[in-house]
Amino acid sequence: MDVAVSGNSLAGTSTPYNRLQELKAFDESKAGVKGLVDSGITKLPKIFVRPPEDLAAADPVSGNPAGAQFTIPIIDLDGLTGERSGVVAGVRRAAETVGFFQVVNHGIPVKVLEETMAAVHEFHELPQELKAEYYSREQMKKVKYGSNFDLYQSKYANWRDTLFCVMGPDPLDPQELPPICMDVAMEYSRQVKLLGRVLFGLLSEALGLDPDHLEGMDCAKGHSILFHYYPSCPEPELTMGTTRHSDPDFLTILLQDHIGGLQVLSHNGWVDVPPVPGALVVNIGDLLQLISNDKFKSVEHRVLANRIGPRVSVACFFTIHFYPSTRIYGPIKELLSEENP
Image (cartoon, rainbow, N blue to C red; front, side, top):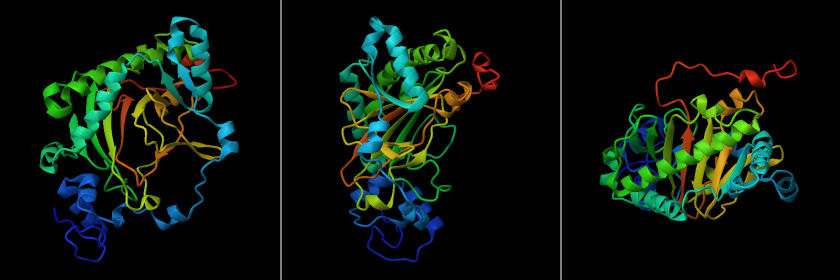
């Protein structure tokens, strides 16, 4: 691969910076961020560098005082077999204040989690020519590999590659998946969908509704799974693994490895979401904030780039964006009042 990137060509040449040209060169290489790392780069290509105004802006990371006020709750779902009301109360507090929580004893076997994380490595560490078969920017494609879905629209590219899979509501033909991760992806999808239904039941009760209310609104109908790979970065302070954003879905369930880097925005700055062995991170999406009449909070978050890597994670999004729907979503009528119209 011979791609000029921000004056740092993988062949060692130097050219004037032309952003569109370099974006196209990166895109057409189909090698992703991992391809850049494998080429031996020691400087961050300019297409990944945050603009000066972003780098200069105050970007506080909360210390102990903020951490004491804003922590990511850990909720033990084993309590569902006993005192369910206590679990519902914990989910309510987290959804109304932090917008994030971690769940343990969630029912997905540790073996499935470990095999899923291993599969992320196995796919992204395939020879480039094998991964290139899945490289695409077609919006309607159910299975595709790429780097930065908004590559040509964003102010700077994120230091991340992704295998994207639409898993529902229409069952995905397993043969569309890369063979190296096919069985594992299908099993994780099945398991995480079951967990999603459990969580939507708890969230329904947390809103004072019947347990099946949110599922009855098709909140769990469609889901996609993204297998993220964040290679080690030569200059992590100049870029991001994932830019700050909130999720435009109902609910996200995230499996992250031991490296960390996920941060949530609080009133006091950015707060780490520490990796907890066997836990899954859950966060409220924009659509769930909307239909809950702002009772639940969809909070901005980001992923830091890191010299240590690769970091891998698996994000499951419950959303309406990947299937035809004429349904119009707004605040649930039972949650409307004169005080909260």
